[in-house]
Image (cartoon, rainbow, N blue to C red; front, side, top):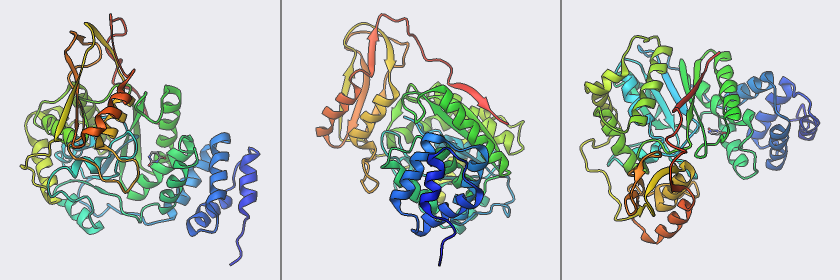
Length: 429
Ligand code: URA
């Protein structure tokens, strides 16, 4: 079959700063998915997009082309409204775990198609797999039936959703083109729109532990995604949230499940509760339940009931003991003073190196590995007082975890103080 365009012409157009036309975009995304546009050609195009950008029309068309590369799910047959949340990823970000059942406890369906961790950020599926028996892979029929019965599903995204993105994301990962805002926005939103949710709340992280280290870029990413969702008929809002410090007091799979259960039991760290409630309010509002009170559902046990039903529906033993790492080591304060820095990226890399994350997609993770925090930035500490506990099954990993933390923990005479606000801004159109 003869092709209507030549990949080199498309690359040259973007290299020279021109807009790509709708037919060019449709063709290049489809031809890449079919293997007609070669990896090296898409790699050059991705770099040209990173350097020269795309306008709103190009971004919307690229997203539509990625959606058209695969299947679309349809939740319109459900008796409940749907609301989903997506986080751009951070350290200790376990919010999906309490949030999905919390929102479901108000009669809203939460289809949470999630991923595994790669690099220093953890993956929701890895966390839930530390619960004995829990199953990440569901068929579309199983997912629909669980949404109708229980309301919340957290499962693996099937390979049928936006296959163009699967291929392109793997290529970007090895060509220095992950950070392009048009490519991040189209990657995330093509999957969310194809998934078919009626409303979407985006948690765009900013800070050392996030993809976006600076506020202006995070804001631009958030605005681009909100526009894309809105243009596609999905009620979309974004919260910009701080990721300079880990969320909560744990980073690591079973450690984070335990902390999430504390939140569902009405306790847990204040920042995890604050963000869970803030995101739940947005989801409930977008799903037409503006008067719902998520803080009350954490306190009165209804969110916990929905959690138990969600875990059991996917084969999990909700009462089983969670795995515990075989070895621990404590990091202590070297002097009296104030903990002025506890860097999210350093803690994320340490948890990853202890075995909580993976270096390659195929690697296994350790359920019990990770980092537990005993103090928060702004807290006064005494020399010798525990700051962190490191957990792993493989003690030869402690050395590299300590290296990751060097410079990430600072105790001084104070001044820098506690972190700024957790929710920095709200972006809606
Ligand atoms: N998550 C995605 O799904 N895609 C990106 O490009 C970045 C984060």
